[in-house]
Length: 258
Image 1 (spheres, one colour):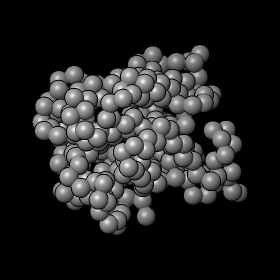
Image 2 (cartoon, one colour):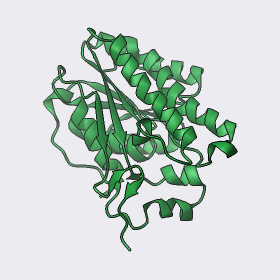
Image 3 (cartoon, rainbow, N blue to C red):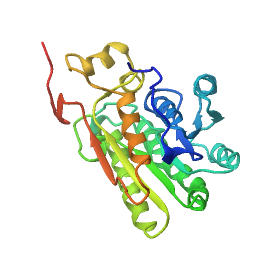
């Protein structure tokens, strides 16, 4: 069930490794933290909502640190509190509107780029020395199928996620020959408690996104993909993994019952 702690035996590849998960106070980030802890990683979770973060950390034996990926000082303090980092899951992000370009809210565009793209750049830049020092580091970006295809009403989000996608591709080229993998997970339709609500502004509109869709993905499905990617032998790099529910054949092609 979504939101429940998965039961998995610890993975030998995770033993002694420190995994940092951003945006971990809810949704995919929280599910990923739970799963990586169950796999045997020493998990550090970061987010702005410290109360929710600390509750999660207490339930899974993780370490909680306040983190605002849009703030340089917050990122510097977060990185300075870490002695070791083996895995960085750049999950913090979101969509904040569904307006057409002709009606674009530039503040919403700026927020989307700041959180999704620049936030990932800040964390990656700050933690890359530790990831290199680990001798077997992983940087994993949670993007979206919106990183690969555009759609009406999604420009502020698709533009930002396209940025995340090319960030991952560029970093992989730049780190070639170094002991750091660069991976990207691109989820399609995932039903979480906050993503569509934050984007559309009302529960009714958020529910309509998933109405009639048989078994949309849930956060635990993406956490499962992330855990699988970071526990492969380190010579195996999952460059890009696109994952959609069976009901979603493409961004614009979704089977709905009734």
